[in-house]
Length: 309
Ligand code: ING
Image (tube, rainbow, N blue to C red; front, top):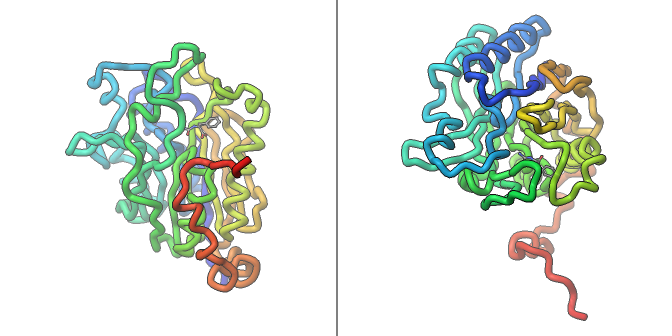
């Protein structure tokens, strides 16, 4: 008997700086309604879904920065999402900027179950970009300035009839992200992203943005025999073009569904949570084939060190 879960990647088009959270939540609720009509049991929203991607601007006024963060979750603006989850029996992943009671700032995601309860939290570990103002750039990417490195690791939670893990955006480019969850027998990795088409330090990579997006997630899915759901906030947002290409990827490594637009779009697939089993029993039987005593360098060394001349 297969464990089939119908999943939606709820891709969001642009969110302007002027858009109130209530308006974005309204867009998300209409996507939950649409998803409900398609029998969806889990819906995945993007990274920092509630506001525009504010790390694109250099700001010094902490109050202006903190205005993009959530002090509580659920909050008044987001509570309708939790109520809809319970009403529809639909779990969700939500990415948002978290300001803790202690005053710490994280790029965070939560996993909410079909009853509307928060079952898991993740704080982004791989923070791309830079920490200081770099005026040469067409736009900034100041995640290293506005967020702390996540302190929760990558967890995997038993819910929705399977083993679910979370990541955020840049995490998807690093194989370690998936392997830590793979070693917890993850069956579906949920992640949201906000990815500019243009990468100022490496403009020659721009033309490969979609390819690198899918390559990263397909590679992580296959090598860890897990589903991967990647959901974009995309389109031209405050003058910055963000990649769409939201995708649902099977443990086989195949892209089973992907977005066709760079606007609000539901990408839906019926996902068999048992599809990875044959890989976990053969090619990627970790217990049988891995040789961790040969892998120390992966943990002990941060940057590459070339061989002696
Ligand atoms: N965004 C980008 C990402 O990893 C980036 C940063 C852009 C990296 C282009 C490489 C190339 O998708 C976030 N928010 O991490």
